[in-house]
Image 1: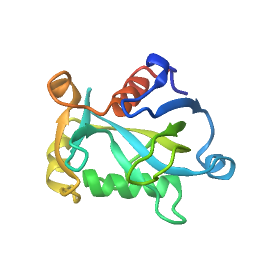
Image 2: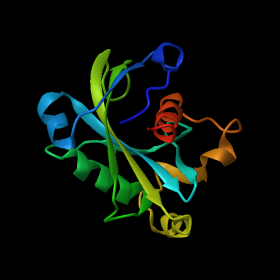
Image 3: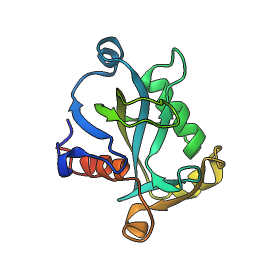
Length: 171
């Protein structure tokens, strides 16, 4: 279960807000909540947290993306992890759902509520070289960096920084 840390009212930079974390199994998430539109993963590489620079949004983010039609949450995060990190057959830790009130965006032109699955993944620090050479989606994720190297120096998406903090403080 995630530790519920607070952001000033949980409001994000674009007006969106995190409403709550929901402790629900992966199986029950898709049965009982809709829409569960995405899956995200916080990656711990050794003792450091890894982020990717999204060239389209021009910011560092945790990894993951939108679910494809009929895809389970586990299938989504596995696919996204393969594309963005070049890793397959890894053991994810599922934390639950994040419930959002989202501002209009490229994906949805109206204010709306949605849910996203949140996972954690820990890999040895020695995996960084493998990740760098194996990742497939270099168009979207232009480069990788460790959070402690870029914090305060480069733009990290507020939502991703918040979710990273929640995972780091999980209890």
